[in-house]
Length: 356
Image 1 (cartoon, one colour):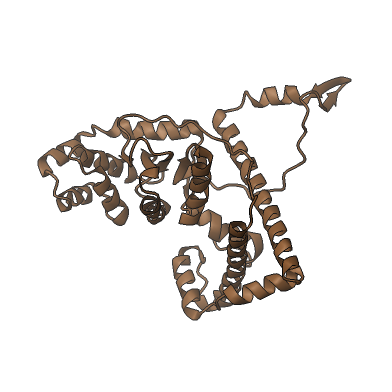
Image 2 (cartoon, one colour; image 1 turned 60 degrees about the vertical axis):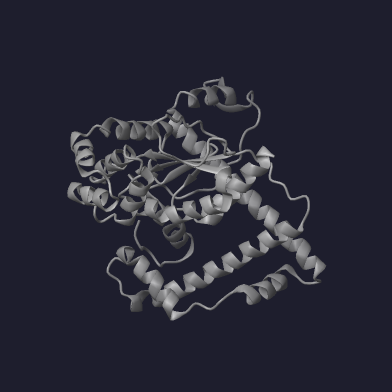
């Protein structure tokens, strides 16, 4: 994904909030409006030479498609519906709050935004440009300053509205979300690295790649999850090195070799903190830094003894339809990309409430 067009509207939102959250093998089509859904299996949805075709027949054909493709479509449909549900809930809460304040919705939102919004500074613009300079297609900060400023300002307005809605939710009784998300069964094995206790009510399974920058970016959010929820959450790591990341498979092996000496997660953190140093000599240096037995580690790494284990993680992910990293499953609910802590918090809180 590149900086293209005018840096405005939905295309830019996609660039900044979606495309830059995950490492992927291929690009995805932009979201489109969902068509009306037929409800009855006996509904006639087509006809050829007098022969009627029912929805039941169409669905039966759909079941013949690859399970991974069906899972992706189900997740997309749920996410679209959930986004619209959240939007409707927010609109109702704002309407009620505006009415209670004897203001129009527009005036109420403007008043609230004025209290929350902070002006976009030159430092903000420079920071954004530097973080996304590889997608600027040679354009300079001077050429993009105005468009970046407008975009950041619009994002802050959206963030202010989101904060308002969350506050109104907390003050309002009877706000419930009953739309069931799709859930996926992710098999685990005794060889999967785990952080947390087995009795945790929430399990996060992460398919990840040590060479993927977005996988590194999600680590602070996961660390905040661990600090916030403690024994209520456990995290399981699955290797999913992408084909275009040549150093990722050996890095994954290095983590398992370190695991033989009880330092899997220390190596895991070391690798993500040093993604520009993932060649074999670098991996051996990381082991030395962690105080591992060099002879045992080097023998493990050079032998490729954990290669099959890494490949098994990739095969499992592919079978499930994983095609980008990081892809995470929270109690079976998919969360894709380097999402912020708040995205994890929303799902985890819903899952904890469901358990209760």
